[in-house]
Length: 293
Ligand code: C2E
Ligand code: MG
Ligand code: MG
Ligand code: MG
Image 1 (cartoon, rainbow, N blue to C red):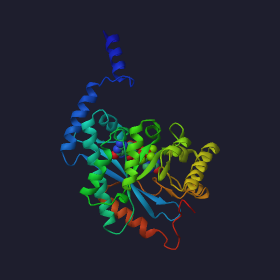
Image 2 (image 1 turned 180 degrees about the vertical axis):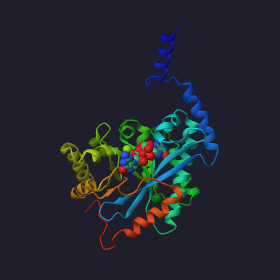
Image 3 (image 1 turned 45 degrees about the vertical axis):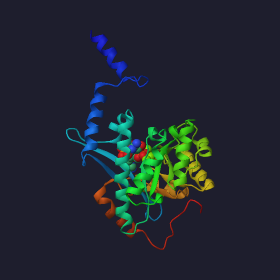
Image 4 (image 1 turned 30 degrees about the horizontal axis):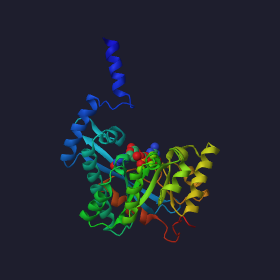
């Protein structure tokens, strides 16, 4: 009997199967409640900065769930569950877009003219209604499309689905920028930029982590920076934690970065203060480095 239970448990968690576990179902129900409440789903925001001056160039929205019993949950704990349900996915996306555009409005209002970056689920890119949903959110907030960057991952962008291509083209036509997240970790990292016209690539944290010790990791970072320069797209290094990594990235001409070294993700009500401090501390006489320099 125990063996049978074990087998059931294993099959229930087999990612190759569609079996939705009781846990996952409970989570979905709770998420529905969380979206009905107005203070459970929230964003932390993390500035992206010029590597030399540390002037802000944007801020990324990172979702959190303040769960009534389990405390604050990270995206990895619940975003996969959201993708199980089309309805939840749409409601969740609307909430994240609303919170992100509200935040962007708060710093635009004090003259900090940088966009907000929002992470997009695979499922959204397979939804022909997604571009209209984004347009609707922009209208609700009276925000120009230039306020918004959508971060997509290679694994999704690489899939040969025609629908993904159409959704991405429609978003770009609207004036929304596209960013390739976790660059270098998916399949055919290099081929992807020939298929999907992106405005930015974000070098995955794992390469930045290793670049001081590993010549191979450094070579990947160097290659990504050069690729970005040739294509005329912005390059952002993720997860910069130390001054040594910052110096190594500057030596490779990487223009922008994100990471604890500059600023940790901040609650939404602290982000304007954080961006203002970064902007004011940046030396005005140093021109921000651009991808096409
Ligand atoms: P990501 O887009 O690659 O986001 C960067 C992650 O690295 C964030 O983790 C951030 O807190 C963390 N990070 C930033 N700087 C540093 C650093 O210097 N060192 C280290 N060790 N970590 C750093 P987080 O917030 O847990 O987000 C994890 C992932 O969840 C994100 O990875 C993104 O793929 C996904 N995600 C976040 N928000 C959303 C959302 O609203 N919708 C969807 N679909 N996915 C989201
Ligand atoms: Mg991201
Ligand atoms: Mg990333
Ligand atoms: Mg990442």
